[in-house]
Image 1 (cartoon, rainbow, N blue to C red):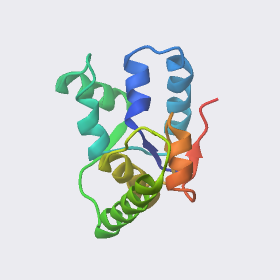
Image 2: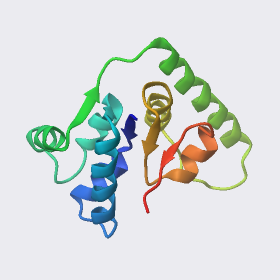
Image 3: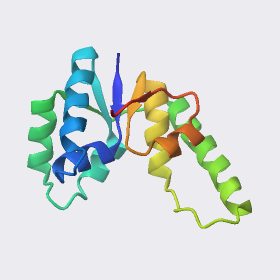
Image 4: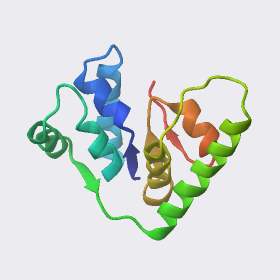
Length: 140
């Protein structure tokens, strides 16, 4: 069972958010189930964390057994673009002021759908709406 990670999982742990302990337990359980994958997009986003350096991230990923995936097949790029276009169409006709999403969010979802079996995220509503067929790892 391959589990892809959203950047917010790493951020929550590194920031010692109230959910960090539970997330760390879930991460350990997912690691026992199989590979834990971090997309290149999530890796790049993680560098923006205020407490992270490249060395810190590399050491954390190594200690956690998390593999970064840098190369992606064409169908991943196409899927991300299609879902981003659908979102953009919905946003143009929406009357609410929902937070604006960026392409990296859709690349992350496409990565999880194409390269993994599930996604561990704290942003379940976004992925349920934009990738309804994607299995999400429950943080409970």
